[in-house]
Picture (tube, rainbow, N blue to C red):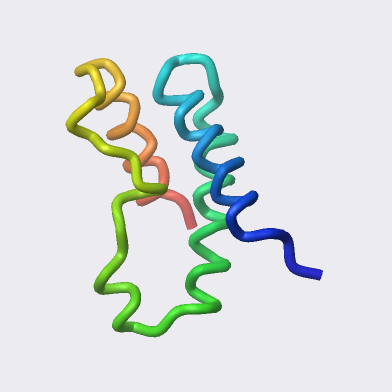
Length: 82
């Protein structure tokens, strides 16, 4: 049984935002994003992948330098994960 996609995205975004703000764990944020990426890969085509939005629609221009650094750490962890 598939979960509600918008609910999964909200949960993942909440975990990512918690990590970026300093109150969440990197591991939880990475796991949430990976789960969404796996589901998207199952549903998408190569053309969809080329049109991918920023991660969960997070606007980097409104983040503080510290939050941007944490976002970069998250992206590095995602790149390094299997």
